[in-house]
Image (tube, rainbow, N blue to C red):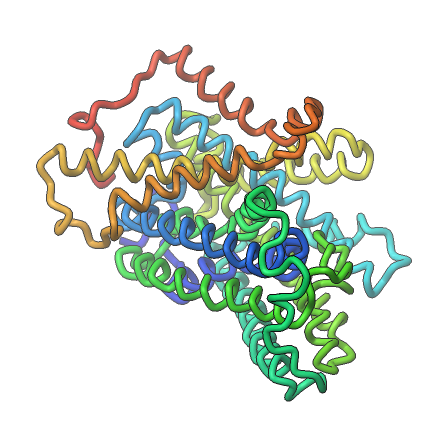
Length: 476
């Protein structure tokens, strides 16, 4: 089947595998992992990333089961609509579109920050404009051009992490850098666990943000050549990638750099010189590490912006197909690109970027509003999968009929549900302790926004939770 709903199925297995991998490797690993170690100590950071890693694996298996059964571009909104309640599908779709449209603006702003590492005298808006034009062109050309771009940008990130792991191991044993650190940093002062459960919980949030993007595999399902083969393959590799690229990398950073080091406090892409990756490379005697890591972080940011543009465009197209957005957004051109949805998303991304230049308060408001939307999408995946499997059984089907089935059901979606709620509630515990209501309202703004969307649709169309026997399991 070459096309579905005007979309072209041009994404190959290698594209999907790299999109799933590249989606989880970004500034969260390259920069923010250092602040996680600084806050909770080496043991606390590892525990948090392992916990979130397990949750993400279960979420991906849940998404994989639904995406192989019903491969559509606007997966989360469609699954919520069909398996739970149309009001949830409406809220989930707009929530996810909003998240990526805002993230697109954040990423093009970050690209400018990164470029100013080399060219500090050039105004940042020039780099941001160039980045936005390039990303628009890639997405306007064809879905294959998006897939190829993500494939090569992801390869750069993967090679960097592999080189880092090799250099890190050699440094731990003293083969590089001159001094074998061994595991001494795991037992110094208050290590391995610093700050107890509250700090580990706060790092859960950092780890959660780091892994956001892995769910893109569900969005790509509608344009995959062979979703029944490529999606399970990509999902199965997620667990080992998380183990290797995150857990092992954090172990190496913690072993080489003590958690007390002030250099670990960087948390944004403007802190390239103190990225834990840069610090480890410099410790091993690689003098040009900062410049190399800056280039890698630039590819990472552009990759995130490219993925964001793709995800939000496809979600807006899907919303239009379901009648949740203006009909114009469901039109596709001869290349299978929903151009109206692409232009609309780009326009919102541009407006948000301009807000960052001319109205910092508006920008901070939008950024805060999109803060927890990724976790809300994950919640939606877990709930949808639980309902899908229950409906599948209730309607007389057997799990053996599924081309790909998530193991350990219902443990997976229930665990993901509990951990997602934990992360959402733990977003800003400190503000609750200090009764800082302004900070609380900013940190948790995504929740009332989702509730408003859900309630609006629920009241207007009087929708109800779909009984399991009536859930639409048709493959169309």
